[in-house]
Image (cartoon, rainbow, N blue to C red; front, side):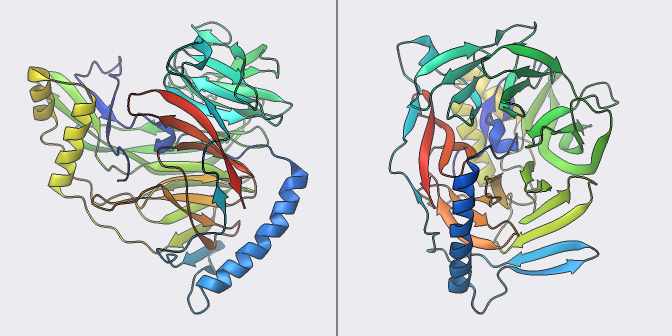
Length: 439
């Protein structure tokens, strides 16, 4: 894949593993893809402009093809798209450099970011960063100047042990959550803690929060994975409101591929190199829950949980080779800093890790305030791609074309006129950046 498909991760305490290998970036494992609140006047203007862009672009690339052709099947809308031409690009522009960059090598502690897991732009332009390394919410103005720090490490009200995500909440409030306890904390616009809650699942653990929808409902999931060797989780989804006992059920879906083996009495657990996963997002009145086995985006009615739309796009795929997997493993172990006997033990532990059936069909997905769907292309080993490439679909699921985002930017959210994400440089210094998007 194009950048670090397989990277070292911390050892889960509950597993007591010798080493856990997986993708450290929760956003690239399907975590919390959403769109944000935005200026309705600007959105209306952009919507009119985009309608013209979509029409002209479709005519340009699909005069004699079936791009964007749709049909109904048993009440499900199916949209078929050809792959846009390799050299085609949407007439949109991303800035030449970030308009805001938050982060430093030395200096004020507030700007020394560590393990940023998420960030959000509030309606007034304030940027809130989930700094998981210190379990704090760091608040900056629209120019990147630090204003306040909310929360801290701990197990009390408004505190975090494993800060995972942050998002807007109805009534100018903010929610943040952690993956270990799965507790969701509510803060007001001044950072005052209000309350915390969990989404009960009827099982031994609450639901894992995955996406906060515009109306304040929360998409959560409960996963199951058992056995040794090759494993793939099964994830069951529910859409819940914090103040309601009822839920909308979305059924079970294939999740992340992993590997578990015992070596000298110790479990060795790893996410498979180039393993397939599961993605979620709000898309207009629909909710996307879709694995990346095929280029087939599946969207469900949020009121009933029934499948409403399938969006397909032509793509090429193949299985990874053993050489490609071994190279990915070696690169991961090198980044982990293992040497000597520890390195050799790790290589032996992962020596029997199986191959996945094929590469993921895409890398991740996001939606924007104009209900465009952005799907990041998967790049097979050996393909030289200077920057991440995305296919953009209109609100009905018709492919509009390709767009590139800045190299090295892990995108957290796409606004009407900006991109927000995290960049990590060659020596591990993190920054949160805003890039202007012109449509």
